Length: 234
Image 1 (cartoon, rainbow, N blue to C red):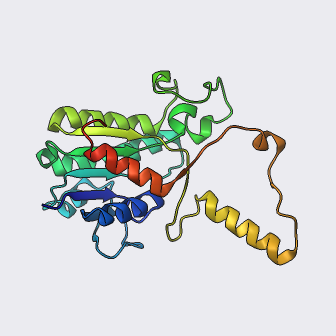
Image 2: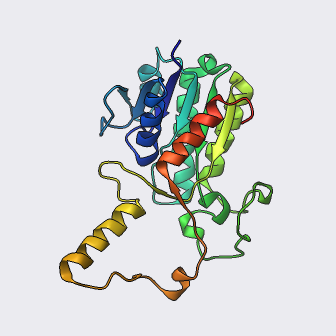
């Protein structure tokens, strides 16, 4: 019997790579997003305003996944609004599925801001030592990732599903119209250098050149997400 996946944010860099991986592995894939976007052939596409609980309920009324993957967020004008909106999106999907999630796996993708705080807190206060580790815990600042996690944990207690949280930093992959993609930015810069005959040199500051960062391939993240959803040792 084919496993069934629901990917929230299927048209993004993470969602698309995950859909490709799951289709290759024989999963039945359904995607939920705010708009149709660029959804892979072979996937069922559902649309709803994720902040509208009634709309999400209607869209998911006949969906019963073996695994639910959250790979979506909506940036707001302040972190307080980020918390309200993005926390609600996670809660709305979980509550819409309710007891149909019993025994399933729910995976949430967050990222580096879990450790450094939101954009508006960057460069302020103490910075945790890298590499970041699980035992470092949460930072004493408002952070919508924490709100998303809290909704994930509350849903697990209520509906009896397994869960995992994944925290990649910079993700390189393909998604139509996605500007938050270092691979695409570097490709455009390299193309301009080639066409203009400019040297292909690092365009940033010495601090950036000597800084510590990490980059995750979207395909590798997709493999990790499937492993977490299916492996008894995850």
